[in-house]
Amino acid sequence: MSAPTAATSRHAWMEADLDGIQLRRWGVVAVAFGLAGCSPVVPKWREVDRVEQVLATNACIGAVNRWDRRYFYMKTKGREVLPIEPARDVNIVGFLFNEAGVGEYRPGRRLGDVERFIGYDHQQRRAAMGEVDLRTGEANIWFCGLVCGPSVPAGGFCG
Image 1 (cartoon, rainbow, N blue to C red):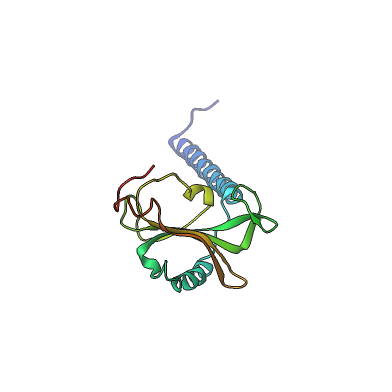
Image 2: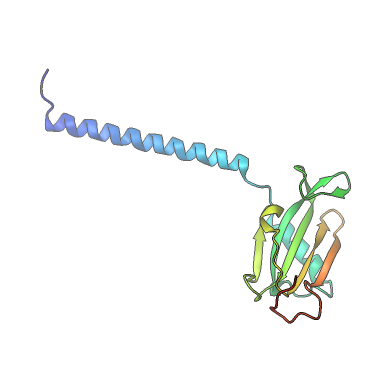
């Protein structure tokens, strides 16, 4: 056996490095495809634009830019809306609005899965929730108003 020369050692190191890059590249591709399969199905921006146009006409909601706005496709089973069902109706966009500037809520849009947005925050603020049917443009507003009721001051906490 002959001893490796500087040229062959350098060449072997470069091949090993290129193999590492190749493996890293394929690893990134595999992770990207894996995450794509797990990523939630979220409304498209143009759909959210349409939802906001519909909601802005509601007297309780008004100017949408004063809200922390969260949008998601509703999970459905027939006509009954069930937030825990796996199938999503991409014709119905659900929304959850919280008054911006209170607690952690900041103005802006957020798209995601409904489970990511639901929490138990008992801080007094205005909130709204419901759904908009993209086929008809009709809003079904389940709730719009003060979370705690009028006796609790703004920013205060209730039960």
